[in-house]
Amino acid sequence: MARRPLPRILSSGTAQLARSREFARSAADGAADVFHPLITLSRGLRELTGLARRKWAETPKEKRGPTLFFTGAGVLAVAFVPYGPLTALIAVMAAAAWKGRARPPVDTGPDEAATARLQALYEALVPYFSVPEDPAPLFAHGGQWQSALHDPAFDGAGRPTALRITYPAYFTDGEPAARARVEQVLHAKSGRGREYRFVWDEEGNELAMTVLPALPATVAAQRFVTAPGETVLGFTDEGAVPRTLPVLDTDPAGHPDGGTPRDATPVIWRTGPRSAEPHLLVVGEPGSGTSTLLRSIALQALPHGDLVIVEGGGTGDHACLAGRVGVPAVESSLAGAVSALEWASGETERRLISANRARQAGLPAPPDTRRPLWILVDRPSALGQLAAADGGPDPQELLRIPLRHGRAAGVVVVVAEQTDCLDELTEAVRTHTRARVVLGPLRAEQVEAVLGGPPPTTPVPHTPPGRGYARLGTGPVLRLQVPAVPDPYDDATPEGLREAVLELLPERHDELPQVPAAAEPVELTAGRTTTAGAPGPVPAEG
Image (cartoon, rainbow, N blue to C red):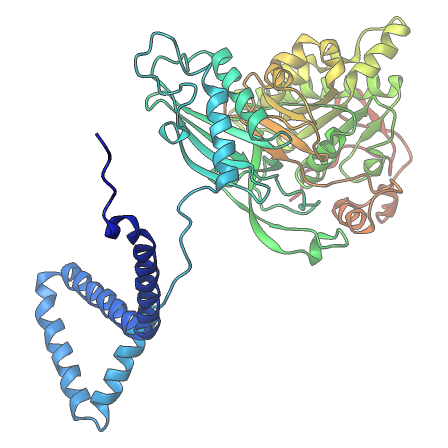
């Protein structure tokens, strides 16, 4: 059967239809340009009307009568004022034009590059969030990421900064190994070198991924607004703890006095007879800021207590505290360290005996037992190696009594050690230091081994000095940035930071006015003697 040709109107009408559509589109665009002011006013009047309706619906019934009365009174007043109606009409039209103005287009979703990245991330999670037995898998090869990835956010480089992932209920989210595998994939696919926080909602089968900004390292040595017995170890994320402190950020020259005041979130370590974590252990890599933290603690402790500093590294990082009021000793040699720790152990026993006798007599504790004594030991493993070479006992054994009975005697022990020497710490140090700080670029396994809990974020390979994590007892693991308290005697220290540290140091003994006294030895606590003008324990402040 021969095919009949199409009618002429159907075979040649395609071009006419295209021209008709183009003409209609051009006419619509021209009409939109001509009537644009009218469209803007009508849209604004519609929004104003909707706003008035919502306000009227929100008004309580007992207030609607007075509202109508005052509105009518205002309309009458405007009507009788010369040029009042015209002015009111102009005001209403101006408000309608403002409300109906063209607004910038709202971002309705990620662009093509972000969509491709989310799809790749979705495909990478398929082996971990799917099983062959699932009849309707949430994650499947060739599936759409919109079904499982929600609320994405990106930075300027196109890398994800926030994401909420819905996973199937059969995923073993209670196993740390399974979680770690998923977190590693997200970390690798979203971009390395950033700190990620993963929050697992086991009840809702959701995983929230957030990229945290770096903690500011602009807080230098300064007086913090704290009570006696409170020590600021550093600062953490906003909202991590229910407290803030006013601080001064450093200016471009590094001096805090010319900086900007702000409220920061501190990590506060509480000591004293009612403290659950009376002693502190600081662990870090070389150059990570462990000595900086010890200097910061020393400057905060000096106004209310005495310091005995033992430096095992022999680098002179704490020489600025030698000879200061309230600092009986700063020792770096083996013999001096053993002597200072023996005195501290005897002083702890003396305080316990004095306080016990006062309690038995129904009297308050003597003032010299209530003033805190701080023992700061930097790198005790180096002293232990020297003692072993000389055939003597480890000086760390002299810390057993201050660690065990320090809370009742008002003695606080702070030990700083490097990560490669943790095995050389004695059992007493590891047992009684319940407050822990880890500084430097460490692996998650190392952080968990020291703190007893996993870090809240993924560690980064490069960190500034003083950056790490802190945990007080059984509390949460917090990110930490230690205040900048460098050695003021170091030539590489900026002038502003050097002045800030020197201003907080107490006076030297040789700078005090000399009081006439006999040169005979004066008996001090625990059998230690000194002469007039020599460094010794400072009496409690009035």
